[in-house]
Image 1 (cartoon, rainbow, N blue to C red):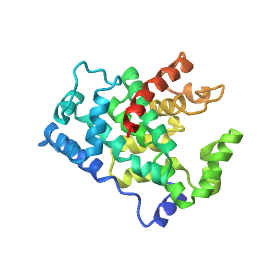
Image 2: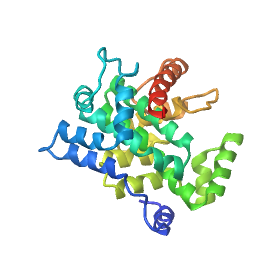
Image 3: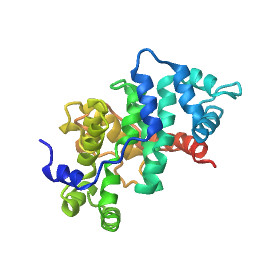
Image 4: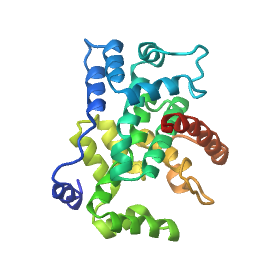
Length: 270
């Protein structure tokens, strides 16, 4: 059952933030069986910022292609449509996340996306490209809370960080709704796949989901790439209910942070 308070909070907005136009066009191309790489390359070429940063990423150590790539068409061919779409999404959502949320939210979303993609490839419970999208959008509900009352939400985040309290519980106390529920409602409004909606809603408590393994990937990724982590990066009571084991979370965290730093350096460059 949906939280009525969360639904009411969404209704109080004049409208849920619309999906960025370039991201919407990219998704339309991917969903249409009669379109392909050329159409996606055209969408990217029209936006100079996206095309420039895509070429920068493709030629970086993150992807490690041996030859220098100078055309968007070739970049999309080498990346494939889904990875190209993920780059578009990362760039298209940047303005919304930084202006209506914070730069930290955008950077954390990038890190969680890359970590989710990596873990999905390792454990094979979910398609890595889908995992990237879920990881990137998992905190999208925080934008609505910041829009509702930026000062109050800053206070909530500060209390959670300083006192090591549950952000979800504090959000529920101060707003009668939390970013997981709101994020799922945004994803539903954007007509994203059910698996994305489900994982966004339950990424803090995967065992409540009908897709615990998929949600577990995002839970683990989210915890591993937090800016600050305590002694217990992964909560044992949650991990024991998941069908995957992380033998060295500290080592994996360092590996993922290093990997995401390369991506962020290229995508953030002016």
